[in-house]
Image (cartoon, rainbow, N blue to C red; front, top):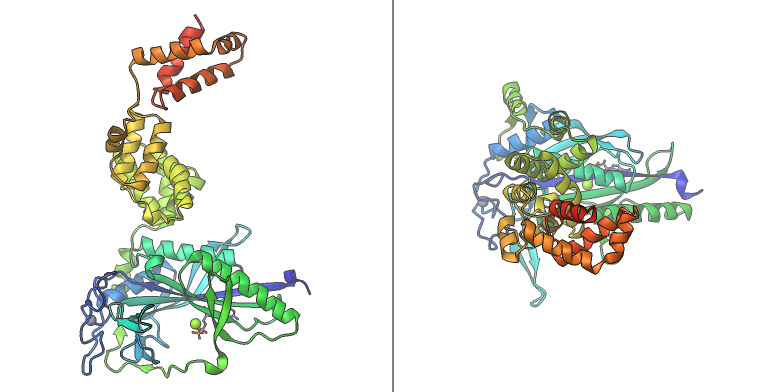
Amino acid sequence: MAKEDYETVIGLEVHAELSTKTKIFCSCPTTFGAEPNTHICPVCMALPGALPTLNEKVVEYAVKAGLATNCEIERDSKNDRKNYFYPDLPKSYQISQFDKPLCKNGYIEIEDDNGKPKKIRILRIHIEEDAGKLNHNEFSGGSLVDLNRAGVPLIEIVSEPDIRSSSEADRYLKKLKSILQYIDVSDCKMEEGSLRADVNVSVHKVNTPFGTRHEMKNMNSFKSIQRAIDYESEEQISDYENGKEVEQETRRWDDVAGRTYTMRTKENAQDYRYFPEPDLVAIKLSDEYIKNIKYNLPEMPESRKKRYMEELGLSEKDANALTSSKAYSDIFENAGKICNNYKAVCNWLTSDIARILNEKELEPEQIPFTAEQLAELIELIDNGEISTKIAKTVLEEMFEKPRFPKKIVEEKGLVQISDEASIKKVVDDVLEKNPQSIIDYKNGKDRALGFLVGQAMKETKGKANPKLLNKLFLEELNK
Ligand code: ADP
Ligand code: ZN
Ligand code: MG
């Protein structure tokens, strides 16, 4: 059998940290990056006798996520204890949800590998608490526990095994991230661990039952997830081809080695002994409550896209690109409103800014400058104060050290030369140095004009007003 006879099957369990101000069962703050063990209290430290209280915002955010991913919302839900021992889990159990998750049976629409729309079904979304963090000390060899993250609220979004390739998985994750950002329930900063996925991969021959899966836990890079899926898929196919069975395993992806390793096999699988959390009451939601959240959902990408095409006259391709992330879409709208040149903002975002983000491996939400600053750049071009070429230099600088473009132009002396006398001098000088180009032009070679303008731009380090330059050259050449 050949590789083509196999199909890869992928299911993802995505954890997203919710951006509520306080933790799920106490009023400690959730902000990232604080000194270790400063955002803690008896509840999230699990001191004896401390009792949890459910943060209502967590339920609201989870319901928002459910509604935005076409889920049914459970009116009658509850919390359960998931028991396991780990040093960063002070209670020795995690409060999660077992058989009555808040949301179920939803879907997210993505494009398959042929560009056709495809629904990836969502089995469930439930709420739970995050664990603390172990900081391994390279020097002393020990590990220190930081409980700041213990009790930070999470939603876990579990997909059905509907994904069929690493690129589909990538599109699913990016779409999910974008939805969570649009509804403003998570910042989804992967580098801070706000979004992470357990990746389940199996292979089987088409029209036969699914194969046994391998699970890679806690992955937080889109690129590594794609690589891990491709690696697993190839390895599993080769195992089957060599008559080896694939065993159910939890594995770890090694990004440097570019391969996965066994962590534990099915025999060592955890038994979590789930049972209803006795310290919390059941979660009962009224139709009114859900309707209200639904009514107040922010504008989603599809609707923004339609608006960009119908009201602002953008192409579908541009509208798609701009709405692919909320950060992009927000900076587009805000900058467009200020400079009143949406088309130009769109062009900068989809060409030069997209290119630089790509080169620097940054996400749109990591654009370092503000909408006001981008709008000012476009105004400087529109007012003829700088050329597009200079604007590109200014943009690079805005990525290096974000500040207002006017300031950069001043600091670097990049103001466009627009006074006729100075430009005339450059034109005369260039013509004198290039007599052949004058002859060429007179013989009908229009390219000669472009060459001359280019020379003049070089002389002025790109600062000459191009319109004026053209005009003056033509006047001289046509004399
Ligand atoms: P667990 O919680 O033990 O990991 P679940 O039954 O909740 O087990 O499944 C977790 C994930 O595994 C789901 O996202 C599901 O889509 C995926 N999954 C289940 N079966 C397969 C399979 N054969 N191949 C790939 N993924 C699978
Ligand atoms: Zn606390
Ligand atoms: Mg799992």
